[in-house]
Image (cartoon, rainbow, N blue to C red):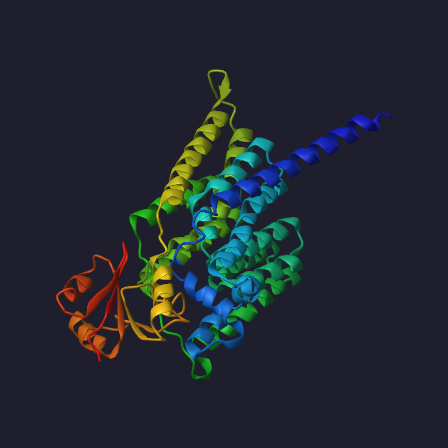
Length: 443
């Protein structure tokens, strides 16, 4: 009879935990549903096109795109009936990130209020919301990398290495997390062991694919321009990576494995930006945002154990923890709500439908549109190609337009587009908030 109250307490605790996770998962999904019908964002059109046309990838460049990151098109192919179903699949996957943050924090045996706070931060984090709503390889890669780190903490190194392998096959730069883990293992073991070999083997498949992709066998993929370091990118970095204050505090409390894991990504950013001359797109922050939430909760827990000073009746560490979590949560909510109310529009999709209804596979020139629009949404309705693919000037673009039946110009404030308006390219057929569709003077 004495066991009955304990059993009831266990059942109640399990029921509370299950309810909490279900609530977090549900809210995460709801926050990510707002832009299902929007035009493709960034590289999203390419990922959808690869998943949609998996059994007949049309050319070598697209095959190389698949070869570099093969796992997302393979796993999302059953959901590629439309861009909406494609996004729904990613929303479900991305909504598991707060659940994995919760499980990781539980693995560290933190105070339940810190576990709850970390989960809330992951639910409302603007990067995690935004890039779960749109499909990028980073979402799926972050889930796999968090699973890698979780099983590393549990001591299940073979399974951890398998998750690492899957993460790198989703996006190659997750090998950085694998290298960080490999460094942690080598420091701990001070020699080559089975677990270090398992992580090294996990990095082998993406290494082979990347070497092939970058030039072996005579194949190469053209480079791309990223979005650059912007005000929003810095804002996201300060909000979600929280690098500067986390590093010394992680070392102060002896959290050097987490320190190494968190160090890997700014090192990558520095090499990428200053070495390659390219900016960092915001979706690269998905995994660092997730792991930094975990690190923040670890530091707040350590400070509570090591600080006995008080502010009035309250411990100074508790006041600091509450203040930090409230500040970050409020800032996250503001940016997430701004994302929710932002109008992403679906003009390109509407124009693709218009072209499909009124023309028979016309030659279409895309001016200043997203580079992947020839793949989606115009892949089935027009023979589309991008202008400004090289060093073409507006006058050269105007001259080339005579070989196209239609020209679609994005309304951007670039200098090239302003100069292009001085040329008579044709008659305006459709004029939307974001685009102008012209019918050229060709016979």
